[in-house]
Length: 451
Ligand code: NDP
Ligand code: 2IT
Image (cartoon, rainbow, N blue to C red):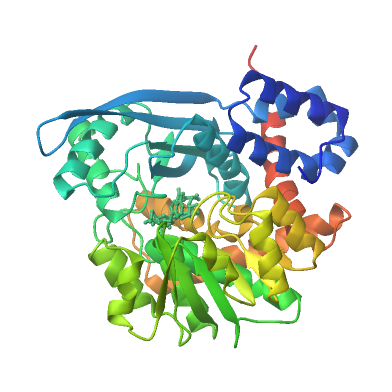
């Protein structure tokens, strides 16, 4: 570990957390990063310690863990494990995505739920933090299997969520298809058409621009980060990892803003297209065909495919946008990116940079946009979908996109000013953690403790 927690109170809370569940390594990584950023705040505000805010903020309000039985196409009974971590409702109903991926476990759910608390706070909208998912792998499953699985998952989840209680959405492995099956089952069980999920189909309660929001928001934020070092996307070589929802629309907007996206990947390998990747080809491969990225070369024969996703960080670029998964950029990857002239890295995925990678880029003077801020456009637009559902109105694409842009500007500015107030100007990681934390901590103080 590059930096360690020095403050005695924060250290004792952290050590107890690790001792209670030493295997929850992703969760510890997320907590440690936040605690290091918060040291000056905790030292200047004894009221947080007196009210046990830190002990409370690292403990989810509720964890739901459940059996998900379903029947595959051959008639075999399968069982997966489902989760919903309702982490913090101080500033609004729990809000956060659902992840379907074989790597899902409680540590991953808790790290994502913990990050979501501060991210949602940064958006300025009244949303608490939560996350859920399942160790189910949608890859290679038929639509009918995915439907039966989603129906079984919602049959239990339905008991714990609601438009004013907890509002799930998509994440890895959960896109428009899955949200449709989940929503259909919720409606069947409850006989209610409400804003209980976001990412719904446009025309059936969904918001225009929600599909694009995380990737677009990431690029609006990155443009501001680049602006702070006297640069912009114009003429920049950009590497975007992943080829799912976030990556596809990051590729689209980065290109629109004048960048050239030269590489993208999936979990098998990466493609390099020196003429600039066309996001529409990625959309066709991933959203329509549900195929592998290596087939990109069938559409664009001048592009190259390389086996193994880690090699993507050896492709020289000015701007890196990791948009796949946690810890996909390790210290050694960051060193290669820096050696190749990296100017800016902004996190589209949640916690894609390891602590060593963050330390390496920040020490090298590379501008760094942390996930909680940089990828908050997705959940912010989910918040806008909730508002439209409550009002029974639908805004135009331009109206939603304009609000998204203003929210991303607001997040950038609050991170920048919180970093300055914390005595670390330009450190957007510290800024995001401090700004996100203060609102939640003050709401917790205000609401008191139930004995
Ligand atoms: P998708 O499922 O649409 O796409 C995920 C992409 O990442 C795929 O290309 C996938 O490759 C790749 N990937 C996933 N897991 C791994 C892995 N273990 N190793 C290598 N590659 C992997 O998900 P999203 O685009 O929605 O999410 C991507 C990231 O962005 C996640 O960290 C998510 O938490 C975060 N995020 C998502 C938001 C949203 O609105 N969707 C909002 C904010 C953050 P393959 O297909 O081969 O598995
Ligand atoms: O990580 C995230 O912010 C998301 N997956 C989006 C959550 C949401 O509720 O839209």
